[in-house]
Image (spheres, rainbow, N blue to C red):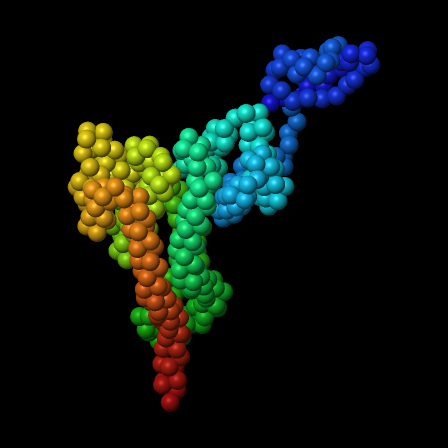
Length: 403
């Protein structure tokens, strides 16, 4: 979209000037003629670098902001406000500058006659395929207000699940970072002051002291090489994970790693069942719903299993059989899905499974936190105790020799 400066005359012959945004000069002339103007001059403005707008485009809209937006949207539409009026209010009161800009663009598109789903579809980086497909199904079925409420509930539950996982990880991570900070402080600022003193003693240093001195010298003398290699390894791992085979291998590792693997599997199953159940309830066709879910689970291994389910359905089979064959879904999930297919209540069964696994995730997080926290504290105590012991063993030898 470019900006054009124009000069024109109105029906009375009066000269008017201004600026207007359009993609081409032909569109500008057409708009001005519709306004009753006769164009006398037209000039395209040079593109300006708007740093603020550029930063807004780079900034992503978070799940919390989308959750608040979805709930406010559903509340106002259910209260009887028109779509354009609702979008206008949301444009004014949304805190996120990026989301405010997108809502304004959606409002303009809706005012020009575009459907809400198509207007959302112009911004796939912010509005997910799940939201767009649910809105489209609501528009076709004439139940957009109900669908918007389901979208709000889905986002709220998804946000709640993510916040529980983040909260459970925050405290152990803080303890681990504190432990590393204490060790680095001792290694770089305290231990080097004692190395010369210990080596000047006329005695054989104990093994723990010699190990500590060697470790301190290596870290303080070659820290740039150590940190450089660590950074290079992390960069190489990041590049590998971005490849299709690397992403698949990393996702397999996340599901199989001890302790955290079962947790990741439960989170993935919860997201899969809740997303699929919400889409089916909203009237999205099963094949299209599975395609959306495959992108929403954020795990290539599970996404591959969902694609196998789609292929089986295309060939006339049920959902439960390929789910069982994949080995990724527990028997309870497969059985509930099978019962839902047979009774025609697949959406409600999937929602019940999602609620069950949300509770399972919460219980697993509590158990992991109760295990990891004391382990980290023991680790920190062991490291500090080893350093203190390495300090005092030579001093004890000196005191014993003096006596």
